[in-house]
Image 1 (spheres, rainbow, N blue to C red):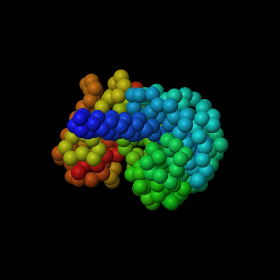
Image 2: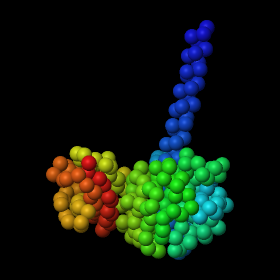
Image 3: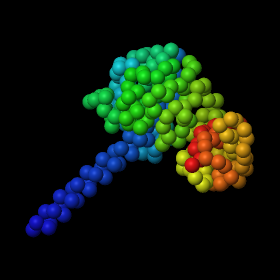
Image 4: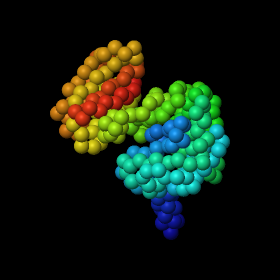
Length: 260
């Protein structure tokens, strides 16, 4: 009888454990992908395949807070399906001071100082804004990092990549924006190959790799890529590189990766 009771307790434990893991994976799908202080608009993307209702999520900017459901949906839906984006504007976003500010995205308003409640963050114009320390604890942002310029600020990562290195200043063209969502690179960092994976049906052209000084170090033909292609990196020294990927529709994107 004791053995049965212990087994039941163990089963309940693992059930709730996997529920928690699944919930965290849902949260990690949702990312800020564009922040425009001059127009007070923010674009959020679901990088996963499962629909997520983000209406109860919250923005925090310079310690000002608003629930997403209280803001204006300019384009898209807060019932965010896989690979979709939603553009939001409203009172909280009006706190996006042009000169310097931060923006944190939270799943709840229960405690804005708790790192586990924050799922994304970025800041510009200066360091130490708002909830930078919370983002640092959450592993989303490195304290002291910030973007420069007036924006808009665009996320160039694959959804799993964090930090200032995966943000750029300036608006992506329509072709570039599509390519940015249609292609991912992994693993990053890597010690052998860098894989380019097509997430959507698109005709790729080529990939060029540059070192941190901007010197071209290698090129690869991507024209016959069906789903993904491995780019050998054995000839490269350890360090930071930029890979520029182009497609046959005129789009181009640049992503940073680390060779270890």
